[in-house]
Length: 85
Ligand SMILES: [Zn+2]
Image 1 (cartoon, helix red, strand yellow):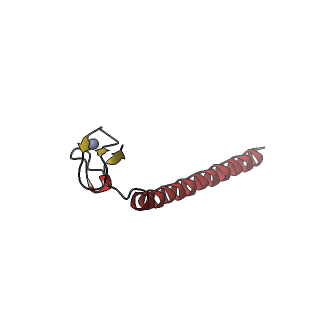
Image 2 (spheres, helix red, strand yellow):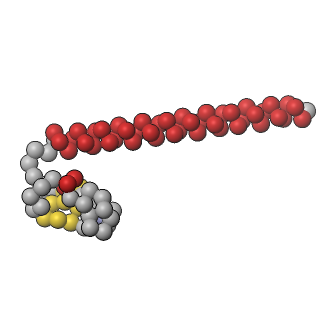
Image 3 (cartoon, protein in one colour):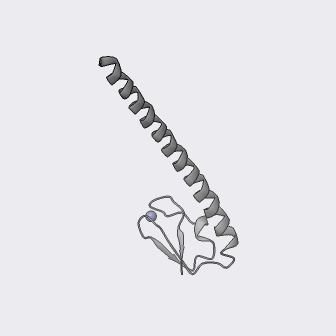
C-alpha cells in the first residue's frame, strides 16, 4: 500500500516536472519569437518616422520625436517607447 502510494506520488511529481519544463520551454520560445517579430516589424513595417511615441508602462509621450520610438527610452522606466498614430 505504501509503495503503491509512493509510486503514484512519483508519477505525479514526474508529470508535474514535465509540465513545468514544457511551460518553461514554451515561454522561452514565445519570448524569442516575440523579440524576433518585434525587431523585424520595427525595421520593415515602419519606414516613416512616428508622429507620437508613448511609454507602455507609465504613459509618457513624445510628439514628433524625429527618430524611431524604439530609440527613445522613457526617462522614468528606462524602457523603449512604443509608436502611436
Ligand atoms: Zn515610463
